[in-house]
Length: 416
Image (cartoon, rainbow, N blue to C red; front, side, top):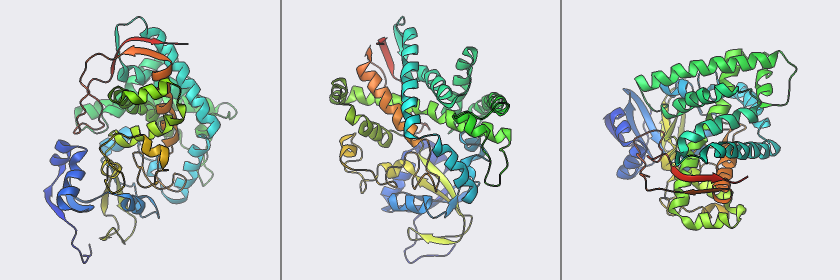
């Protein structure tokens, strides 16, 4: 690799254990200590460059400088995206398939998603009413699985709802783990993939219908070929699973409503105009996934670094979302910041940066906002509950993170 006028700081030795020990703070600790936005180290004995900041995000996501090819450990890839999914594609193939996802997530579709989620929340509320206490994190897995399947037009037998929810939950919870927990979640994914393939095959036996399932089942690649049913099943899961993962953001939202009761009071009074700013700040403030990996598609320069083709790079999402140069008082929860300013697309990156249509920004960003905002509305305007004493601590070396208690709620009553 070519040298630059200003040497890039290096963290010597292999940092794999340090990353597991420090979790989300791994990058921030070194950026701050080294007074730099870029540093080099090794992970799993492979050289890697860590970057943070809006300009680093632009470099990483725009201009097709970095690909996702071999950019994540296989254990993470198979839990979250899997091979041949849209996130692993590049160029024309990527843009063509990404357009299919964006087409099914228009404004009308998002309004429908919010309505389905509200209906499933109320349905679950009928069961919650007779219980002294629930752990909302656990309940949300099934609520969101039902919601995602209904919205996507995927038949879900009553007997399948709980098993599918458990399998999605394991994929999400164990994405950042290694060894036995990850193997168990991947075994569950094989069962879920078989279920998804059956849904794809059944959809293909019928005329195309305007649903997410129909769009994926009948989608043709840029070369005109129908997707292999296994790939189509993976893409279907890549719609449903991220919606189930939004439950983690919702649990953080419960905690933040409890920690900042003035926001609860605003929403109880019907101030719905601030629901989206609140949801945006939940996404910025809450630890979701810490980093995203890429490999240089060619020799290039950026951020004061010369990259050779194939070089491995980690963009630190968590550090960028808390970069004090981008965010005033970044460690302070402040939804008002989003009521004033439209966030820079490369500064707010919990689900990636750049432009969704032409890059690897997550197409599920809008559904995520819709589900968080609707959950906050339901919690403050349609649901009575008390919050018993509990452990709200968030371990930043557990990836993905969540409040330890999972949001315990007592005496829950959901109003029709």
